[in-house]
Amino acid sequence: MINNGSLLDNRVLLAAFLAWGVAQVSKTVLELFKQRKLALSRLVSSGGMPSSHSALVTGLATAVGRQVGIASPEFAIALVLASIVMYDAAGVRRAVSIQARILNQMIEEAFQGSPMAAEKRLRELIGHTPIQVFVGGLLGIAIGLLFTA
Image (cartoon, rainbow, N blue to C red; front, side, top):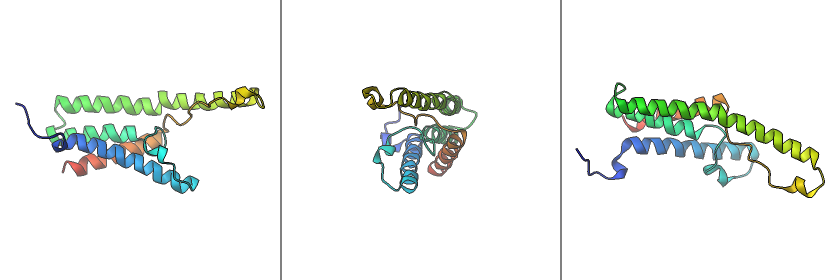
């Protein structure tokens, strides 16, 4: 059966994106307190506390579970997706962040004072620590529960 409601009626989708938005705003506010300057770029950037990727997928999985039940195929798909995204954020993407930091340091030391040293640096804030993923996951679960109550 086709539901002719609007996209804004999809509480699962809204919960997921609300969780992502709250995480992104939280990163921006935390950065403001930490650095004493407003970095609006944090609203759309990856990396940092809390993980917005984790918030998004756990918000999605939680809302799906609340809407159609945890025994449903839809919840299974959302849970598997969340697991992959969170593992990737704390694993592969974190390793990329560490490698970028090391490469930037090596280039800076090797080419100090030359035009090569002024080249664009690799982005270092890509992945997440396990605690950032965990906090993002908790945020997503909380928003998923609240938004689909």
